[in-house]
Image (cartoon, rainbow, N blue to C red; front, side, top):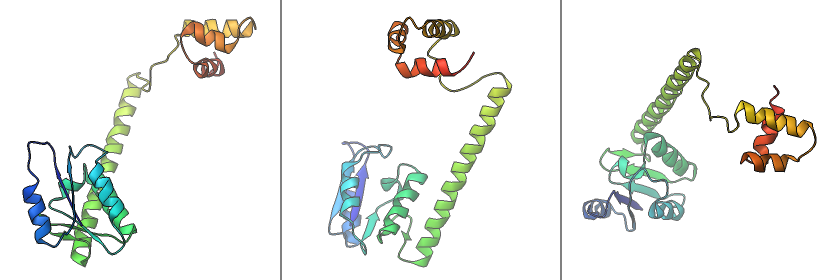
Amino acid sequence: MGYARVSSASQNLDGQDDALRAVGCEKVFADTASGTLTQRPELAACLGYLRAGDTLVVWRLDRLGRSLRHLVETVNGLAERGVAFRSLHEGIDTTTSTGRLIFHIFAALAEFERELIAERSAVGRQAARARGRKGGRPAKLSPDQVALARARYGAKDVSVAEIARALGVGRGTVYRALDAGP
């Protein structure tokens, strides 16, 4: 089973199709879409068509995955279903021990990259907090609006729904403001 992809209609799938058929792919699914798109109809059809014992063949790794992480998740998902993976350009074939090793190295690099991103994000948040920045979404209600909502709710003269309507927010926002304390 083969999968090919080009990013735009001005590009041609012929080279990928020829290479996939030359290695024995009888059926080739092909998308014309950016690799960053999460919804690629032919990829979804291809993945749904594959059965245990099949091999998914791509011309290059970047034709299948939109990122290293996505690629690793896709190939690991195939492996769990008993489907092998082969990339012609990189010479990866998960039916061989060498191919599995190379792919596991890619997986380790993807995990390392995710951990680095998480560490940098944590350091950035910590630095922002040290400078007095809170982060997160801005509050929907100002302190004055919260005080007004508490006063009206405490006086029992209007319902939460009426307060929410008057402030232009949802009831949940009003309830959270009332529960947040002074």
